Image (cartoon, one colour):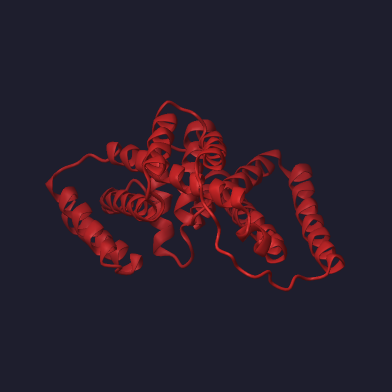
Length: 283
């Protein structure tokens, strides 16, 4: 943020934005290969992309996709034996302690800084709806951070994704960049804690009821619909990010090489570092 106007930094992130396009395109392909296996999957994916294109909130799109999945799909979850569950008392104590900790955290944010509270609630909502992996959080975060709140533009958001991929951790660490960009170090801490809190709570819940969920036909159908919707949403984000890039021959070469490397399962860190080097030298 301090060196962003230097020529070599501009060149660096100009190239890394191309890497981000490749990453999201690869994520859309990976989601599509696993989730789109029937014409209904493809229909949900295309409808989701169209809805996002016309400005409908991705959270509404996801809920509608889950509802369509429950109605339209005919799936039977695998017949798995029920696992040994903890006693209701131990489970209740875990949930109570977790909810209490989160409630105290939210109350402290409320009395300290309403902006921090808004940031935390946003990240919690993103994580709660990010089914299917970290890349599923990107369109949701993009919608809230860029389109709803206007905290940054698409190019800056892409810089945050690229910067996050140079550091250890999952792609949802982009939340830390968003928090720092909006409220400094305190915002980074708040956004990071908030981003992982819903997953932590769901992990505790899932340990207790995972066997029942796996045997639930409605849950299986809803999940299938949600995953199909993310294919369409990621396709839209790929197009949106691509439109933000000033394409030329060098950038086309970089994005092609990055996609090929991702398909070959080369570690993303090496791809980002190579893209950074070529960007500084050539762009």
